[in-house]
Image (cartoon, rainbow, N blue to C red; front, side):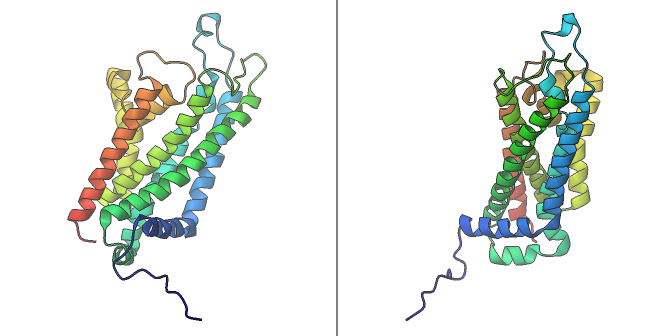
Length: 263
């Protein structure tokens, strides 16, 4: 019997082949497992501790009291871990020199970045959704009897959990884009920390939420991870749309610079 050749001719590859390659690489790195495990443990632990220390609201604040926002407080840590993972997905290859082998297999750099983004996005989205729902279900048990206990069926709760999980994937993609732009791990992580923590904190101190509300961390805290609207902040879906625009623009810039530069 004659064997059937399934190999592609040299130079003939598609998105599925690039995505499969990226899936194998991402799954084979120990840093991936440890980063995702740290995200799970950190978010659940912070959520439980925060909600356990949540006090019953005063009568004048009962209408705006939102324990969902407290139980999802761990996003502040989870976004950093997932963002760093996104950075390492591409800068790790540049620092080790493995990018040469990757580009030899997939010379089409925009296609390569799209494959990396798709694989990272799917993984972090799946993990993010599991983490947010798990954090909510575990954290709500730590509430005292004096504090209203939210349920999955309450208005705004499913949306807050779904968008919070998606937010983690967005930050992972943002880290990937920054890594593609600068191709240096420490610099990309520094930029990520600046965008997520430093710059919005500075603007919050200077102008309140007027400008800070447009930054990713503030969008997550005041728009996505809330079951009740927060005054003077973006609505959940507007905030989510802005995050999508930020990530898309960053990935386009990263793909453009990858084409213009040599490996």
